[in-house]
Length: 487
Ligand SMILES: *[C@@H]1O[C@H](CO)[C@@H](O)[C@H](O)[C@H]1NC(C)=O
Ligand SMILES: *[C@@H]1O[C@H](CO)[C@@H](O)[C@H](O)[C@H]1NC(C)=O
Ligand SMILES: *[C@@H]1O[C@H](CO)[C@@H](O)[C@H](O)[C@H]1NC(C)=O
Ligand SMILES: *[C@@H]1O[C@H](CO)[C@@H](O)[C@H](O)[C@H]1NC(C)=O
Image (tube, rainbow, N blue to C red; front, side, top):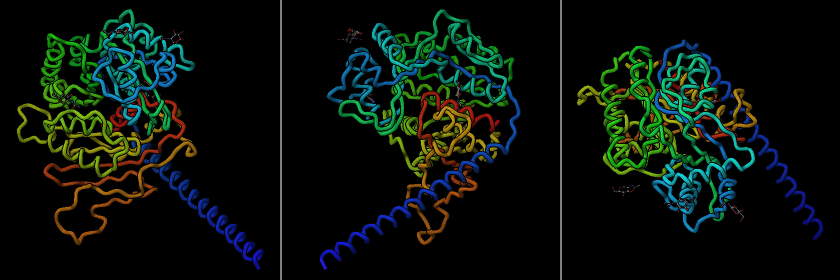
């Protein structure tokens, strides 16, 4: 009897195992099917529009990116993990580097910081090149976006000064405006993977900390010459990025703000037939970001940002201090709410004084892409552009144009709320009005909104790469890819 019930117990648990196994296999199959549907849906949406080659100008700056494994680099510097993760506006000592790295590593947030100590920076670069498998490539927001646009067949003007090494890697379809210099500014990229361990710190997602000691980029060297050329080049689009190199740059005489004023004067003169896009980045200086909003962003039609940069600029637009880290996996509803607030603040045409209203906002996050446009603006093909941005995110991080569903994962849920704020009126209306169900065959969801300002919004899920080759430069590639289909 005893052994009988043991037997029954054993076969029961065996049965449970089989059912669990079959259930899991079924669930995996459903996931795989959803992944394949979303992939082919995104590819169809991307292909729907054939590209027309246009003229685009991109400023400012370029550098040589050195990609390293962040933890190996710290090891080569003999730096052990600190007691505490502490934010630093800029880096002077090895200890500050350790604390800063721990701070962003622990939250998995991308960041870029100035190393004020030149000899320390030299040491860091040397240690980075000691590590096995470091790579270098031309970098800097402007240069990466320029190359991306050139790859799409556009005719590109790039405002940047760089060394011959870097110049040699730039294709003929990019015309570089700016005299060459003996040595490019170097950006040292400390990459890390999801769940990497440094002492007691663990990274929640793959990302990177970028260090620089720029000499040329912070003052927008060569800006005048570039802007002169833009006037005769008459581009359809001017892209502005790289201004974060000014962040925390020692500048007693206020030269940076003079440079921004000069740029501002130019933007105010530029005919409206040239659209202007601003690419956000990691800013920590409240006064600098405020100045950039007033002098530059007020005269831009479009803004690109990631999930960290969006809350940061929103806070500063609202007169609050900068934010250093935000949720690195925000919900769609949260991001949509932030986009609406930014749009309400910068898209309002009532008190303009010669400003350009913001008519396009593109937000890139790990899990999804979102693009808002004003329905009456010049921006076209939002649905396909959002799909292309989502595909580019995967292609860049996985390092392959062809997407393998086996190396992809969907993080975005099958449906999302349009807002995390409670709908004010009509409590009985629990219908689909406030929630969007993603159609896997047509994975880009687009809809119209009629708030104070009308808006057309598209959201596309990203096929998140599970075998990451690189994260740095992702945002620039993604933003560039989104723009090519919209002009
Ligand atoms: C790290 O320590 C090793 C051995 O103690 C030493 O040879 C090396 O020079 C140190 N590196 C740095 C960057 O201080
Ligand atoms: C700069 O870094 C070096 C280490 O490379 C350090 O010895 C020196 O104290 C640092 N200078 C300052 C001003 O912090
Ligand atoms: C906020 O503002 C204060 C004073 O202006 C400043 O000291 C501080 O570093 C700022 N940044 C953050 C993230 O709080
Ligand atoms: C991103 O841009 C760089 C050029 O700066 C290029 O080498 C890389 O292939 C791009 N990634 C994608 C997915 O296009």
